[in-house]
Length: 409
Image (cartoon, rainbow, N blue to C red; front, side, top):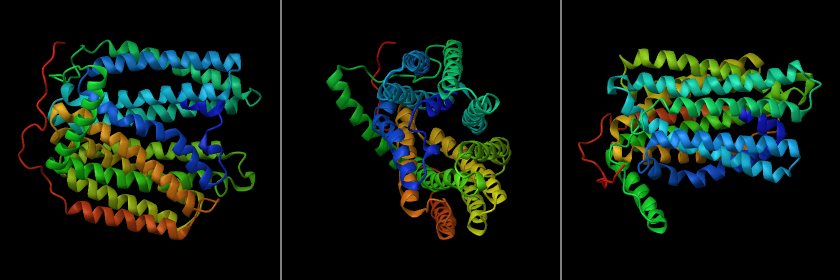
């Protein structure tokens, strides 16, 4: 709901762009700040109690959304709204890292795969539902102004953030970990310590091997999926839109996202079932091959059915491998480093998506479709699968990378 609100109220909604390059600029503007903030998130989630991060983060988002609502009503300058929106979105980095790193503290290790199926899929389905509610509001009340639709969506977001804050209080203060937080330091010493700890975390992941390989395949797959995402935005305007051109681009793209959500949902159900029979490593390879098959549909046809079916198949492949990748990182990373591991995850995620937007912006025509580019993505999926299939299945036996310094709660 928040994303619908800011997309309606502000100028940086990439679905309104008319070319690949303008979409690339939009994504870079939205994601670059998070990439800069990202490296500092993980060390803090290893130093602060993660339950408090989630609680305070949701309260901060609630306050920021309230400020945005007031600004919209008061007709504040666009740059003010833009800054508040970026701050609200930046808080997500802390929440996602804290929640993902805290899962192993509240779920038995044997159930990690199932938990990793539920958490991101609920988020994806909830985001799709929020977007659908915003789209329905614009369809049901076409005479409503953009401002009124934005305000309705933002109020809904504020209510949701308030409920999230209350639900977080049902968790114990130390329930999400870390078990032994890293010591609190003075500001400048803490800044230096954060960079040192992040570097230690990267070295730990590299020494464990399987987490760093999982992060690599995640970034590669996110790059490929991002290029299809940009292509789908443009195709929703040109090819899928038909004679209506760009006037129904947002509605068309909402339909594509709906089909993608189906793929995410199927992955959440199927991955745990196969997880009992197939090794995580092998499942990721299978998902990459499935992604290649889905991408091949777009290499062969520009029909609407090909775009929608590809959205389901490729989204299934991306979500299925993501669930397994999250589980590998959680399983093979020491608890004292886990927050930093998922910070690196977020940074690579954003950098890959920005890279996808840039590459797509320079390689795709304004229609969004290029058969050679789509075929190249198929080859890239298969090459990634081949490379990852040759990586080790289990990490070497190592102790914790960085001994945590005990501190009082």
